[in-house]
Length: 115
Image (cartoon, rainbow, N blue to C red; front, top):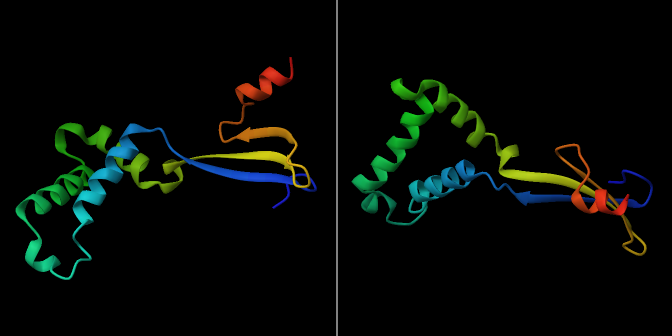
């Protein structure tokens, strides 16, 4: 997809957000055995408690309602699992032009190059 004729590169990097990483880890822990042939035989109380903890948080625990709602919105929006940017590169020679981050500002390299 060209932003300017002949120049574009879309980038997606994992988010540095600690809450998202912890949620992904917890989700994997809950589902790691779900697809195995003996899943019904190996589902443990520990697995049940892991799932229950996530569901309780999604439901909003009484003493943390506001925080849990914000957390749920943050960790379940998969767009927040990545940091997106677009680099303008000349497709013919890979000459770098500009980087557009999802924050809308110029990257440190861009600021440095414009001085």
